Length: 190
Ligand code: 5GP
Image (cartoon, rainbow, N blue to C red):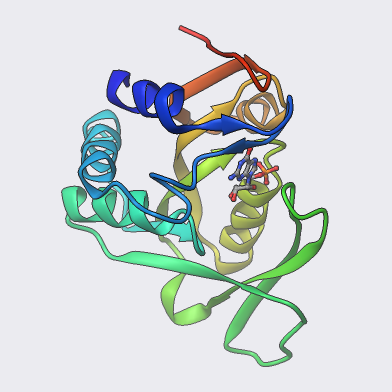
């Protein structure tokens, strides 16, 4: 998606070879015009599939996921990051290791919002090692739901997430795929 690649090149900043800051248009300040276009691009790509819910992880996935849900006319479910386990029957949880923070959190969703038979479209801001996506997959399995599509705004293709997810047979679509990056240069895959 050219508009997104232009924003990454103009406003993104790789702080090293692994971490890209995009806080001026995606993670902190949000370019809603760009996010609307992102949502429409996901909706177009996945238009042949029938989902029941769009799911994302708080907080940076919310903007692109909200516009995707709007375009597909589906409810949006935001999975929460809790610091500790909650032991009640109406909640599903799984532990996820955070790439950016080097810590773990409990990915949490109410059973009411992820139900048996749900067909989920997962939307997230970044794909790195795939831990966050696998967390959503585990919660979907616990709920008796399936993840039928994964839309990623920025994929760091030099990390393992894409290969790990596609090896599980998952349908992963990324709008910008970064081949490599450094403080001075960002290169995309075609
Ligand atoms: P994964 O679970 O695939 O290793 O990492 C995905 C999550 O980590 C995303 O939801 C995103 O919040 C965060 N993340 C991973 N890499 C980056 C990055 O380079 N920049 C930013 N801003 N967030 C990242």
